Length: 412
Image (cartoon, rainbow, N blue to C red):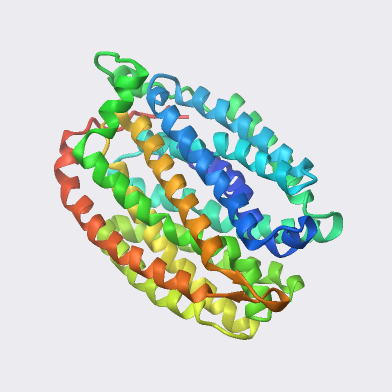
């Protein structure tokens, strides 16, 4: 990598950290937020899913414009909106205000991930994307190591609003760095042939056969996280017997272990094959989901071990699947493809979170009933995804040859 490419990887990873942290913060705060605002599990599921539905709608609408602008400007526009939405979350005083704030955050924040992956694909060749996306995805673990424990700590001190305000402060610094240091990314504009309107561009993206297969695969890939994560903190506290004050330690140790997993999985995907790594990740995830969702009262050390192995499986699916998907679109439809893919992911995740809110029932003392049913659903969708990803894998070699090489990055 050039020096500038290393900077871009670090910047995108930290940017992803702020966006993922905003989404993940809501889950561990569930045990505090639900009684504070007097909301039911179904309402909390809606608070989570409204972000996804808003992000999905926004991503679909943005797809027609995604390849018509400098990616830096496109990123800044949506990142500013994301910061505004997070600020509204930090100021919310009721369930309905929080619901609207999450909607605003989703409209802008849900598109950012697709822009990040489009930039990554623009600047790095296919042979390096496993490693690069492995580093970018360390934002997921970083949000656990630094963000979630800090968020829980501040929420215990100053209330559940504090973590959102913390994210606003950090995101503002990231936005300034983007303005000052990130170079314009316009190679996809130069590669473009005849310009067509936004609607035509969107239609060209959603009617290609190989793109449709990728979108279907993406829809199922997102099911697991959206089903299990929203209720993980409540399940940990009320079902597994871990006290709220121990949650930061659980997330800290799990995140610290998995922060090393992303780069290692990325290197393994580039070295041993992205699909083989995905098969390994799916097998491990299926096993650990069945174990996790059937746990009863569990000692903290054992729960930490289960969480760590589960996240190894999740990362071993997430990173190689993203690297495989990045090889499908051509440069002039890359942004549109990523936006629609993000939209499909968010909408399907929203349905998954909403369904989870209907499946899970709160019993006496906050105990969650039927949580193991979610595990069965996640296992089923994982097995179907494995079949679909095999089809994606088999079409990629031919597609790589037909794709224009990545846009060169500035040397420094």
